[in-house]
Length: 333
Image 1 (cartoon, one colour):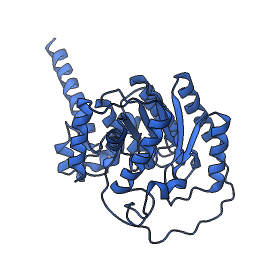
Image 2: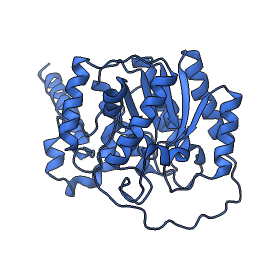
Image 3: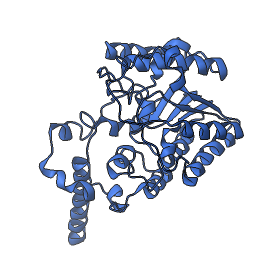
């Protein structure tokens, strides 16, 4: 019996050490690569949002739910992540609907340009979206759909298999955030106050084929059907950016799809002057994404569209959101 107890104690100690090692070696996404922590911050939020944004960096950099709340009383959350691909957006939406049912889902269509064979599909971006998701069927499906040839499913289950070489690159961040996490967003919006105006853009090259893949259309159908099944209004948008180029041929395909499926589509690139965006001041990376001032302008503009067209509640005065708004205002000073 004593031998059995010793063996059990050894096994328990081994398991605890293995778990601790996984936690230690996995990136914390707290002070560096903060984009990797955004997807997980949703889980601790109140689940009473009437608007959910899904998509890539063009949502989390460009739309501020706190501005939308202040302007129109909208409770919104951005479930965005870096290079979030359309099959990832679909699974993230499925996961979100397990927690709550919004009135409106806003999907940024930029990812329609990338299928699973695109060079933009990479492990680095996969990790920023997947690593901090809670384990669920949706996370399992995202991993299976997203893995590159060099990745393994087990490396997501046991991060030490992927990050074992980080042992000599650990920093104080890894120890400080071993048992805690840091919120880097405000309802999914990542603040960036830097200014890097547009000075020049790469030459707009012609493509051999402008058509979106059947694979991407298939996932767009899944997003559309999921919203219809749950009586949710789906809204498609293209956030304003100057690069990568959003070709007219791309735009026409989304317009056609939206018309055929009775979906509203807003190409906000066409409303830059009305929004008041100044690309010499309102971008932090030369026209790819908006900075704080640009996102504030866009959020005010789009909040008006949402409130006018989709029968959303005015929640201004909500104690929790008033506190959030005060914290947000302090952060942007």
